[in-house]
Image (tube, rainbow, N blue to C red; front, side, top):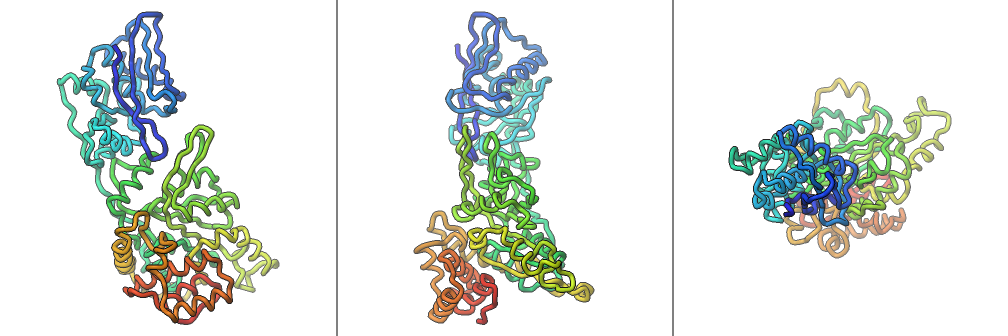
Length: 504
């Protein structure tokens, strides 16, 4: 008799169903696992054998064969321990085969039979619901998997608990979803003294999901401004939270099974490799740009990142997804994020201060910022110079708006965009609009068009730059609650795009 149960193999954010078959036959004693298992899966036989011994279950002196089907799909990870043990217990007629066949399982076994948490419980629960099977997972992963409303999730602590459940001695209660985290964290904008233009740029960027770069001397507040960004972004919608959590689940970032409704804020160090930023490695794991999906990727000291890393961002910024191609895997991850960057104007940082600048001014500035390629800079919608703050201003009481006040305006602007793109698949914010959709929503009035054409002729705007100015102008109009893109909106968008300010 061949006993069967089911588990999953991960391909990007997808969890593909895998049938685990167990056959016990006459022959020399052996325990083999076939079906393209990796090292962790092959070692499962020792963990399963020890866990069964801890339950006083001895394996028969026969040939035990575990087949993972489909055989041409690579199987990776220790989460196959539990389904292998289930199939074996069913083949030994310790638990009923009918119940096991209706189950999809994942979990790592300790040598004493405890079931350890694993990554990927959330996408596994989605697949289990699609396959109309219950999901058996570690107790510590149950709260995460239970967020899939259509899935029946059982969280077990030990293999003994699993046996008692399937034999009717002590049924396992269905898992419940974890807590919802809503605190955005970060700092409050009211703490930032001055820098009104930089704050305005941040508000526009947050409202339309536009890419933003701050350039200023050391200590001018660039990183502090970026740390305020989570506080003005609206919470994730239910669909966005599930989509983002799927990626975080594969990376083991979901804490205590709780779904986070705050937008991701990722800030990798400038020594990060291309695989860390884009994704990759032997198993083609998601990178920082995918972990920042629906949120913010903050790159501090932008020119210090390697040229190779920066140029790999160009395509994901345009498409909102990235294909990680390796010899044994081709995986596509979503990466619709907002890029926020900070940079010093030159190597010494004091290009505009003659008393503190180095002897290589102004060549050091061109050389330093020249590390950022023209095609990447062309994709940054808002470019803001952050001047140094006078120390006398630091003693003044806080007088600016709080994050809550700005967040309310951002939420109103995003609500307008949500209604605008309700029937447009693939469009969510103004930054996503292109082609005919952009013409329909962002064509400026006659005065605005004349100003835009005049500045395009004078500065040699690229087609990409032209369209990005229209998107930013549409967002400024949304913040102004204006149904039409007018000249002042275009002028402000131009002022953030070009080196000089355009008067409205």
